[in-house]
Image 1 (cartoon, rainbow, N blue to C red):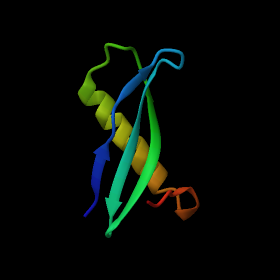
Image 2 (cartoon, rainbow, N blue to C red):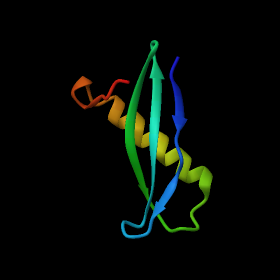
Image 3 (tube, one colour):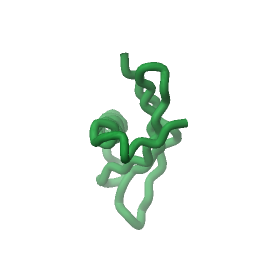
Image 4 (cartoon, rainbow, N blue to C red):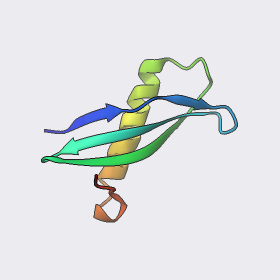
Length: 70
């Protein structure tokens, strides 16, 4: 089972995007990814969280060369 945990979500006004650290726990291991979702400051937070989680899952499914294990 895969579990996804988001760190503090911040808005980067220069980039026009929300950023957060996203941890994916899978098979007893944790993989950490820096993620970003472009959008306006007033973007719905449910959409922001979903986008950040999707970004992390895409990175996670990209192969072991991009994984950061902690």
